[in-house]
Length: 102
Length: 102
Image (cartoon, rainbow over all chains, first blue to last red; front, side):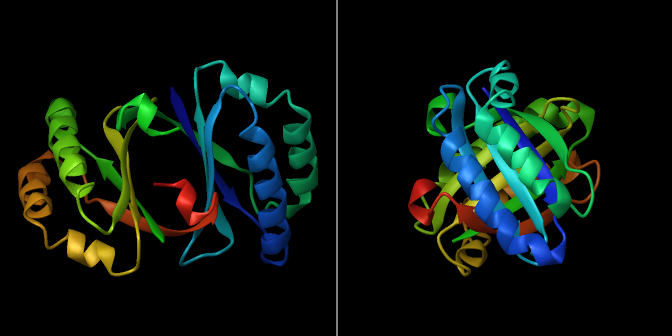
């Protein structure tokens, strides 16, 4: 299993539009075989900042995710919404076991 | 619901001891009424860094968590393991619904 935190900073005027676009992407992503979770959280003290927590079944799943139509659509739609480039950090699961995330 | 990411940087020699101590704390924390999830992840490209993802049922639950014996024990045990002070970032849940985290 692989956990990816995508850190996103959006322009203030696009906060609500971003939430809509990423929620649609999350719903579609959860239909992928390789996607265990797709969580969206918004920073309490800075609502322009989000973390997307993407939990993948294996190391290859992120690559397959990026080939999907919903990912490509999302990437294009949110391009102008970004206040700065997104960045990702990869994590190994320590607890709970891999079965505790699904 | 409230999501807290605690960012932890431990000294290299304490990495395994930290994993044991935080796993014990996580197991006990999950028995608290106010704790929905307690996830531990280790950064893939820097194994001395961890994120603790603490998902609380309400705004008061973190305070109650910090009053528990297992939290106080953990805090004392890991004190010398820290390479730098821990810091926390609070998030609001956007997706999935609050029922999708438990």
